[in-house]
Length: 126
Image (cartoon, rainbow, N blue to C red; front, top):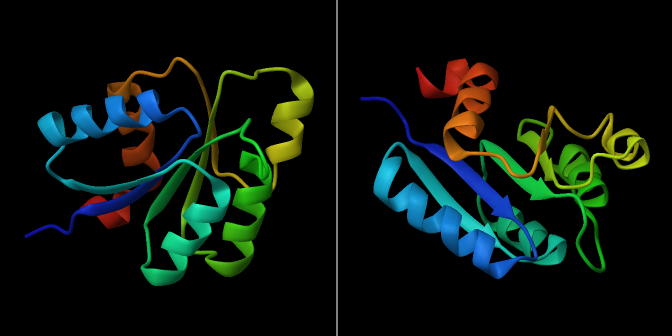
């Protein structure tokens, strides 16, 4: 029996998180997902349980995605780190380099996300 992939989705857009939650519930039984609408809340969740992957929006109030992923990299280095952003300007991308494994642009279909997730987590999924 294969282990379910534990993913934490972080975005300040509640409707986007609800959409992802609905999609995952209907289509991806192999994922155990949690959802957070802030970097601070995500760090609290991570302190309580390990995750295989964190997928964070770049632009959020108080703590942006690159700040969050730098903290995740420092405290939980085994967690794979994705940035999902509608911001594709060079500064946003460069700000996140070093703290992320993958940069995906919004809109990003969940099947596209799943493909990238599989590429980076072959040992976890198999």
